Structure formats: C-alpha cells, structure tokens
Image 1 (cartoon, rainbow, N blue to C red):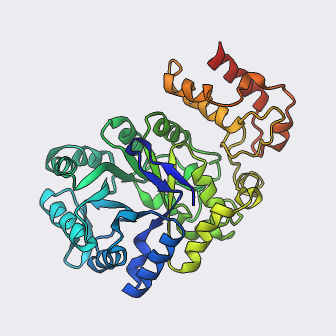
Image 2: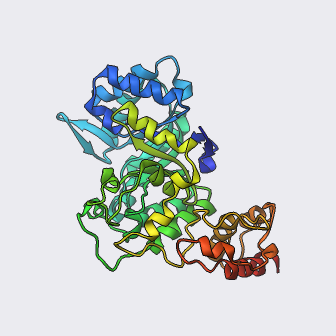
Length: 382
C-alpha cells in the first residue's frame, strides 16, 4: 500500500480508503471481516458519515484495541432523529450526534472532523458561522477533532472551502463522469441517466478546483469514485464504455491534491478489486486511452490530465509534473514561490526538451506537449 500526505493535515493516508456507508447493510460479523481485511492490506483511513446507531457501534467494536491504526473521517451534522438520518446545523442536535459517534466508536477523538454535506451557497453561510461553526471550533480547540474538513459534491462550494483558510481537507465526489458536469446545488443531476451531448472534457471549474487545492495545500479524499457503479456498465456509462475499479481509482489519484479514494465495499472481493490498484500495471490503470476512444463525448481533447501516457521521455522529463506545475502557476498573476520550488526540485526541467514530439504520439488527448514544455521553460526559467 502506498501512502500520501493529506495536505496541511500532514496525515499520511493510504491511497485506497474505506468508505463505510455500505456497512449499514451488514451484521457485525461482516463489518468486522471487511474492516479486518482492509487493515491487513494497509488501508488506514475510514469515512463514517452515517448516523445509523448500529453501524457506528459495529465499526467501534471492529477497531477496538487498535484505534491508533485508523484515521477516521467523522461527520458533524449527520444526526439520527425518529429512526432516520437527518442532516442539520442545529448545534444541540449536532452535539448529541457527535458525542454518540465518539461513544459508539469507543474513542475520545476523531482525526478529521467533517462539516457534513455542504452543497448549497445558503448552507455554506450557515455551516461556517453561528452556533454550528462555534461547536466545530470548540471540538477542534478541545482536541475532540484533530483537523477540520468539509464534504461536498459542488465544486463551487469546494472552492470556497479551499480558499477559506480554516478548512484543512475536503471530501469531494470525483470520477470521470461527474468531472464533465458544471457546478450544481442538486446532487441528483450527477446521477441523471443521460448527460447533455455537448458536454466534453473536464469542466473548467473542477479542473481549477483541483489545482487550487494543491496550491493551498488542502488535501482531497474522494467519494463516489465509481459513480455508484454506473461506470462499470457500458450501457449506463455516459461514455458508452465500461471502466474497471483500477481505472476509476487511477483517474482520481491523478487529480492534483487527491490523497485517498474512499471506495465502498460490500464484500471482501470489492476490497481486493480496489487494493489491486497497488500492484496493477500501467496498462491496467490506463483510463486515458479508453476515455479518448469512447464512442460518446470527447474527453479533454487538448487538455493535459496528468495521466502519464507521454512517458517515456528520451531525456527523462517528468512531463505530467511539469504540466501540473505550469497549470498551477498560470492560475496566479505571478509564479508562486512554492510552485517554483517544486518545479526546480524536478530532476529534469522543461528546458531540456529536445522537441522530438514522441510523447505527443502517445498522448490520448492531443496535447501539444513540446509547445507546453517551451512555455513552461520560459515561465519558470526566464
């Protein structure tokens, strides 16, 4: 298992995470077996947004005695009222639900205290001010949460979080299908049976968000990496082709700032299919050529998605990283010192490009790589 730094939290999280929502379907014995197996594979981050009491108890019992091996995303605002889940910003209800989470998980702290499910502008205002936010701040100051995070499906809200200064990481929905869609306050839009035919490529607001998160050192964990399983079915996929779990995970992990993919697991096999990413070949990870050849929608033509298909370079330039730093720098009026420092730390620079264009013949999206190397060299080395 490989581990990545989760932005400014400095937590080292497994690339493959554990989205625990599906555990609500299972008895304790199944929950324990799934969590135990994930731990043996090196998975160390688990998201528990669910308010349902039994699943919280089962998770707590499953990790009892080895709490320190797990980094937990616990949500503030997910409550259980009259036998059902209710999202709320009512501070008293949130306090009751969060204390219940601590009790049932048999812990006195949560690593990542998540401001739960903010998709609307009006909710952003309520979630980041007043009694609710005072309670979140109280939890951080008392040590009951170690870091403040936020979960959202809306890139416009995620951008506000990344720029806020107090949100340290974001749980965001990422997959190739959702990335085609513009910001929306209605999550149902992402699960429409058909997308508009004129859509193609990554929506600019999402591409900007990923770069902004990396620039501000706000780490991302990923929910909905498989679009609810839709991407595994050619008939339901908006691309007209099926992807594998490994391809979906690789897509997520090649977005800037992404540290962990929180896949959901119903069976041991599901965990194995996700963890197979760690030993997969480049060919097995390849989502780019599949999407580029998809019968429906053009995907990112002319845009670098940092997929790495341009390798190998005869002078060993890490083309994907050069392109990523170039894109990050171009978001600002001047080149940020941190981005320039990362660029200068590369073993080989864009200035070394010999213009052979062999990389361009391998790029699934028709990126003019040699031209971009010249622009990067001029930007960083002039």
